[in-house]
Length: 186
Image 1: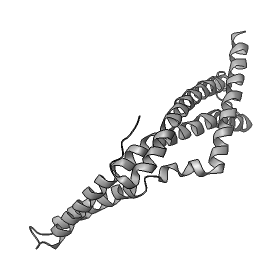
Image 2 (image 1 turned 90 degrees about the vertical axis):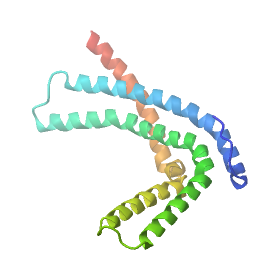
Image 3 (image 1 turned 45 degrees about the vertical axis):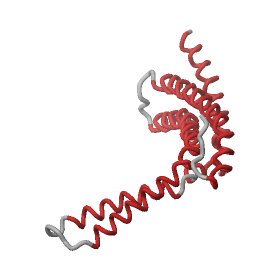
Image 4 (image 1 turned 90 degrees about the horizontal axis):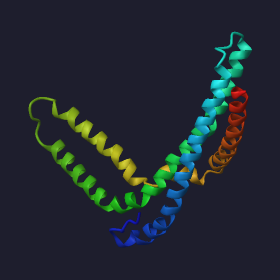
């Protein structure tokens, strides 16, 4: 997926991102498969833990909660990494659209300003509508002004370490689930 930049200053940024996008898309596909494998393995483990019914003792409940949390943790971390990689794949297009969206936001802000200066019409019904439109514009401007914000976890060593441990956790989960399936089949 190659995106053509729409303005000169963004050419280099978009070119670099266009080289990263295919790698991120491939890692994203693998991450999804890995997360789904972990989710299936986790479901098998949780099934084995609960197949005889819910535990009656407090310790049994605590152990069950720990098993469920451990079974769900790795696929959830990998799922969040998968969503983050989607942001990487979409970033060149978002950057390419920035100048046009910025102009559109400036025009909308000018319209809102002109409307707010007009003499009052029909009581105070216009004020809540203007406030609502201004709030919507400011919230969409936040995404426009910080297109890189969703990518910040990629710069976080704790997050990347969590992803690595989650990948190892999925491997362990798959091995445990395989043993559980074999034991349940016997």
